[in-house]
Length: 229
Image (cartoon, rainbow, N blue to C red; front, side, top):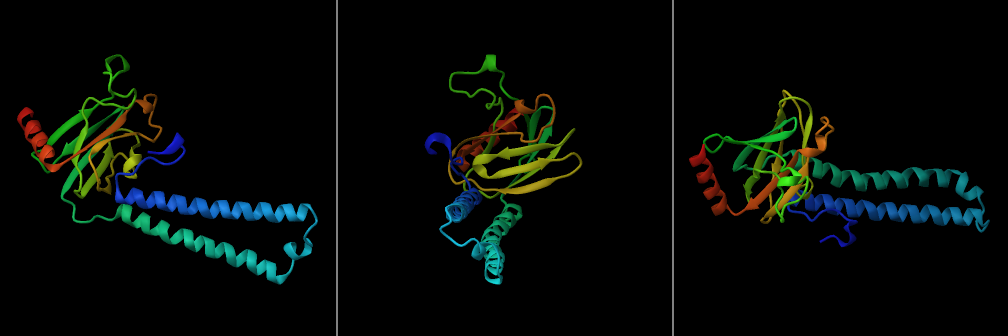
């Protein structure tokens, strides 16, 4: 759990674990650079260091050029690796499709006899005690954990964004196009997200809820959905 809610959400994805590590690594570099700059500025202001050695000369010019290049390389390499892993598909066992509408989501499980359903936000006056305002939906997206899943997304009207922070996923749902990403969850749980693209007046009222469960429960849910379709 994040202390004082000042850090990122708890991760439920190997990709998001790498994103959190990259974020913390980058923050350490930024803090070090900031402290170094403040230290040098304080010396210059207090006249404890001859200013011309910091402001002119071939040596300082080379240092101010080479050091930032090295820092950028240390930041770029893990960044490119994470970017590649978010787009790469690895032996997907399940594929689902999510379609954005103004203002709700439609989910299609085409691998399982074309299961399809809409997911609407639960109105505030219909919430139960254990449900969250503006986050809970009437039909959750049920998926198994420890399974590589391919998620496809598109839109029927305007640009939406299918976003689950705890899974490290943010995909634009664009009309006439299919975007895809890899989803792999480590543990069971309920994970909330929202459309993060300004798609209209009810933009903030189309949440996303992923319920991660074991494969046995997922199979039972599929059988139930097939019987009711």
